[in-house]
Image (cartoon, rainbow, N blue to C red):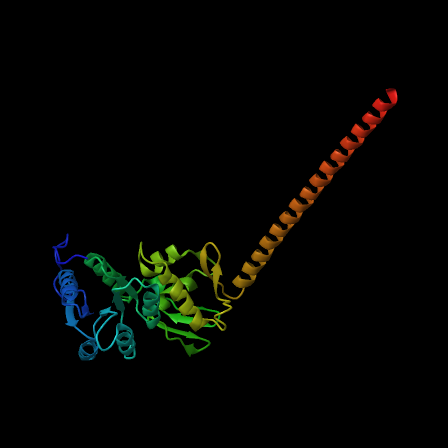
Length: 302
């Protein structure tokens, strides 16, 4: 962990030009470092040392993003995140002092868009803030990304950031929306977790369990039976694939064909092995019979 901010490699942007960030951390040293780096990156930053103060500042002026410590006095970061999200979507990056995977997963399931484990690089945190805000929709999507998406009863409007299934609204987080939109743009194609992290999160690094958790949460919202997913399929050894009506049948036929080919190959191997064993046995029997005959003829000549 860097104890004091050092000058960034680029010239500072005018403060506030890039958005407003609320930093919530009860450690004044950590908060000071984070605030300093965000200021120099061009953000307007407010600070809060506990949950109630964070909620008060959040209600007074809605920030564009919240950097939220998990371990806070009186009210933990999970509860603060839930209460903020009850007033509408807001990007949240959680800070945690523990590397406990359960805490990270719970943070993501609570609705956090990203998390950073202490000790961390303040420069990395700034990059994460930039990535999350970029994905949160600062600016209109490209024309090819603005068109509505649909399939299997799902309908997404990237401009309005609204989603529904069979006419019923879906409460998707920012990342869940982006993940589902990406899969709907590429139905029938399998993507690895690294690819999804790069394409959806915009990260070239990070914990791949982030993708796994979001896939599980998304299945819980779009699948009729999340325990037996029919839309978002796991492709073993690869990653995940979205199957729309028709695609799934083709995929299943391919899986059946592959299984048949494997079975046929196995059966052919077994037949070959049985044949080879029979041939070896036959040769052994012939050899033993010939040796017995030779012994008998030798005894008769003697």
